[in-house]
Image (cartoon, rainbow, N blue to C red; front, side, top):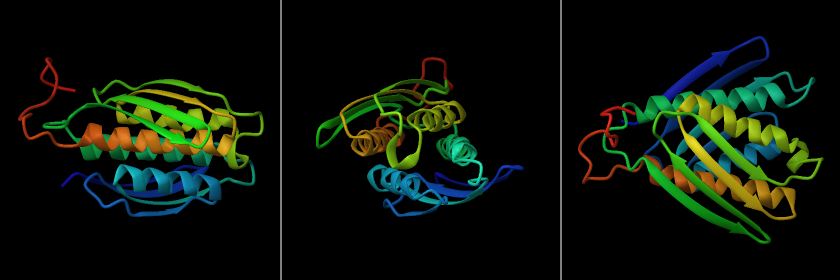
Length: 193
């Protein structure tokens, strides 16, 4: 089974997360940040991942620690659920439109965390979350999951830009973690991801 359950506690956050890569898209998300709950629920739904996230953070300070640490925990859970990567497709891409916004995401689950993020958020950001914090979430996730991701979104509406990015990432992730029956080993010339 390609699953993971992680509980991480720091002085700033307390996060419990469970993930099933071969799920139905069921998402139960409670972060204390309603817009971020919406984005993570979209990630689960469109990635066909079963995802449960319960987070308590120092939101009286701001959303930074909570969003960053969820990225860390989700990335760690992804790496654990993928395991050695035997049989996975590894590379995938997706394009998702949302009204005037268009997101393009390309992923490599090759074990090296790297993020190229080109999205034009307004200074206010989507749902009261600064746009640079959305980038930081994906950076934390990719770094801890060992994913190289290129995320590019054009658009004018912060909500549409962000939601298109999450949905495109979800669809690309679903395709990248899919088991390809023609691949019986680890999809790398090195023999390891």
